[in-house]
Image 1 (cartoon, rainbow, N blue to C red):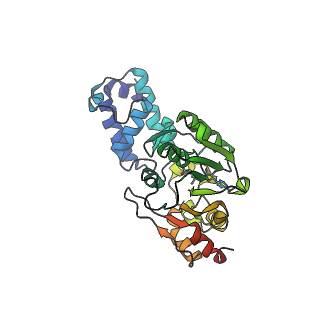
Image 2: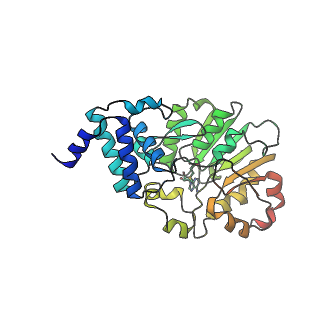
Image 3: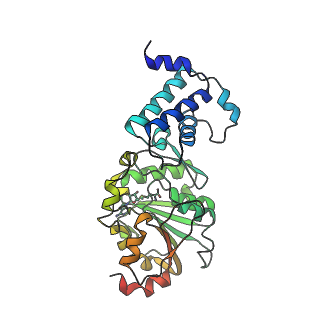
Length: 305
Ligand SMILES: C[S@@+](CC[C@H](N)C(=O)[O-])C[C@H]1O[C@@H](n2cnc3c(N)ncnc32)[C@H](O)[C@@H]1O
């Protein structure tokens, strides 16, 4: 009997598989960064997701005996997670963002932006304009940010834009999955290029912002994600520079820009010393998210050319 068959004989319950997977993850020193931060949660997401069981399943599910096919499926997924370093959401096809389930695959980066926290707070206290109606999710990827805004704030109409047709196709699938197609418009655009003449109360963006140094040292898991979603020039600021230069034209007078730049926040501060960025303290973790009002963008305009 080969070792895989022997393993399948020894692992009987879902709990057995969880314990074994957790040990394998510990030993393999995989990187956590796509939805969990420890081996137990990583095993839970992988195994429950693979079996299409809810993440908040009753703990008694751990005592359930697995079928031979289920064990085989789990062993294959664990092997790919360790040997190929495939992130769990690409193995299960699902990820959670702002309390909503998204379809994910390698057409787009895996949702994980800390902007989810601001969506759940409906951008309070940052958005102080009239009722929030017109919203843009620029660089939308899977559509997680724009679709979550549409779901959490039923009075909004949301445009989602990305340069990558593959990501846009996935965003459309997610709009259908979440039954939000009526209130969202998804289109291909190189930043603001195809959006000329439009005005938004709120522009939210999580553009590519990884600098060359970080890009070169990223764990292998990130190499499964589209390169277009990560790198943005040597200092990571190529995309956000263009966004800052143009955002004011696309915002209503009391509009707000919300952007994530992660580790590139210090480089951004240095590049634009006269822009009064407000960096948001995030209760659920993450960093490098700022807000700027339309007025602040206009006043700082001469520094942006
Ligand atoms: C960091 S990902 C964010 C995706 C999604 N908003 C999220 O939070 O998961 C950046 C996205 O920007 C898109 N992108 C890169 N360059 C772009 C450009 N010039 N115009 C529009 N989108 C662009 C990529 O295709 C990718 O989907």
